[in-house]
Image 1 (cartoon, rainbow, N blue to C red):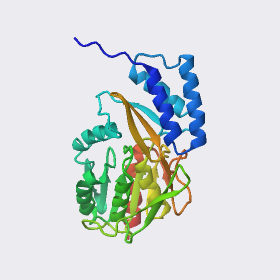
Image 2 (image 1 turned 60 degrees about the vertical axis):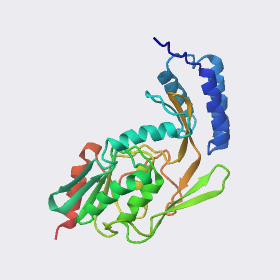
Image 3 (image 1 turned 120 degrees about the vertical axis):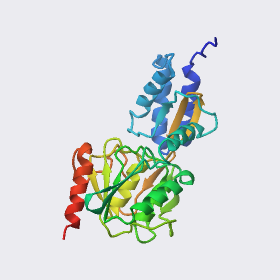
Image 4 (image 1 turned 60 degrees about the horizontal axis):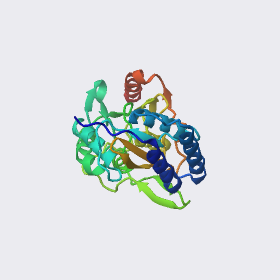
Length: 301
């Protein structure tokens, strides 16, 4: 019988400190967090034998200065490869394969109102373009559309742009990434063409959100809201706007560190910390019925 390897917190914390100081988009905050983690390590706060507990303690400290929900030490129950980003991709692929390619629900409600639920994530575009394109083409014939993001945890900004391409009529600037060194990065635009029929930019569109809606799913809601294209229905979202990368520190622990920040061309800001605020607030559990009623009222002669 194999004896489990004893968890040694110091190498994990030291590597987390290195990643913060070299990669985190906010250098001043990185210095504060590095000092905090080092002090907590010296105090024995991380002297635990369980990797999951260490991940919880470190994540709590990482988010204690500026509340950045993308800044985490994540625990993975299933061992993951050591390559950068492999932990996240490995877990995402399992979810992609078990969720019909990230589109577990397409439904037609009364009155010609369609529901599209991308979940549990907006997966990498090289995986998701085919199932998402098929689903978006299918709902293009609806009189109104409800996009349900209440359980969507985020994903790929390129996939956000791809989805928006079906919901707008013209190529549109969605946001610009700004990096640690202060330089502007690449702009995000909807694609000039989509492989299927567009729902378009004029028919009624509603986006459902809640307290579990996060990251790229928030971007999808925020972009459409700022453009005046969609009515956001439900509860405020979690408030994570910083794109991040992942590093495997042990077979069960992954550090995720934001390396940039998104700036919306309409608002000049983003949803970090505040979340996306609904245009039509209601309990998240009631959001679908509420949006359906709004759509029927809008479609009524």
